[in-house]
Amino acid sequence: MRYLSRAAVLSPSPLVASFRLLQMKTPTLPAIVAALSFIAAPWSIAETSSVPDTMRAAAIDRGGDAETLSIHQVPVRMPKAGEVLIAVKAAGVGVWQAKYRPRDSDDTHFPVILGSDGAGTVAAIGTGVRGFKVGDEVYGTNGAFYAEYVTVQAENVAHVPRGINPTEAGILGISGLSALQGIDDALNLRSGEKLIIHGAAGGVGTLAVQFAKLRGAKVLATVSDEAGAALVSRLGADVVVNGRTADIAAAARSFAPDGVDAVLGLAGGEALEHCIDALRHDGRGRVTYLYGMEPIPKPRFGIRMVLYSYIPGVREFEQLNKAVEAAKLQVPIAAEYPLADAAEAHKRLEAGHLLGKIVVRVR
Image 1: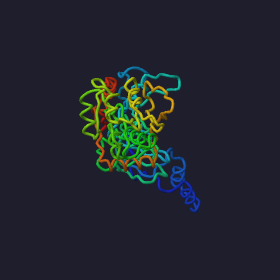
Image 2: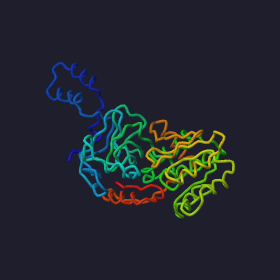
Image 3: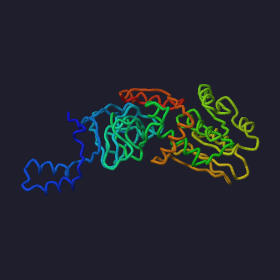
Image 4: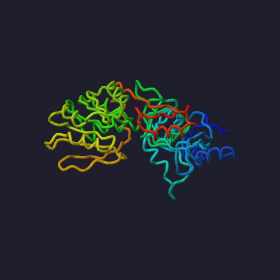
């Protein structure tokens, strides 16, 4: 198995290497080969640690149930310009992955490695990347994190914020961005406003409760069992309603007799409609709901309803890290599975009623 070491770092540019070659009076064959190797390199690496040729990854070979997810030995792709290679420690198991997994279309090239967010340490850096070095603890999105290594665009990677351990960081990227952007960008929540978070015990909801409290809002959180109620109460919700045993509409009227200012929908259905019914009637109430949620809420005349999805980026991760540290964020982990048991993690995902988010431990 081939390994790349720091000695293999490509420091001179192709132009510099070629220029030095031309300066030589009688170039030798080894000198010519060395110079051309700089020009013909299949990747462009600014910094690297020892990285193997292949890695273990949890991938699917076809659409189907959770059993289609199995361990494969696949090549490690080294970073191109603007990319970072991460040695993955933990990956998040998002609810959308169970929906993606059964797909089987002509434009799908198997095997497909799942895992949209995760965390680990920087193993190699492509040229043009600034702000990271080999060994940095990072987390990110928009990769294939059910693997020992993943290559990600540098703008989709951030340093792990203070107070967050590597396992928590593995589930922070998408859930954290979704929670914060729902509160700040989609709802533009202000101090003193009253908010209903429907579906508050999940991976996004548990973080949204804490970010809403950071912004000075009053929060009514809905959950589906007593364990979820205990969790979101501990995380700071002012009022908690178990939608299976209590009257959400009555609780909302007591919480905000003149109507709530905003609703964050993280679960669909009739209970969400009751939350929306509790909005103020002066045209200032607003609703936002997360992309992929089903069923979507019914349109309401005079109510601003916004469908949104998370957006990664350098500025977005900076804002998230700042909020995480200011809130002293707690990141609830619903369950942990080793990479070899990724299929079991998906079975647990499909069973539902998760408190927080599932983690796949890679190393």
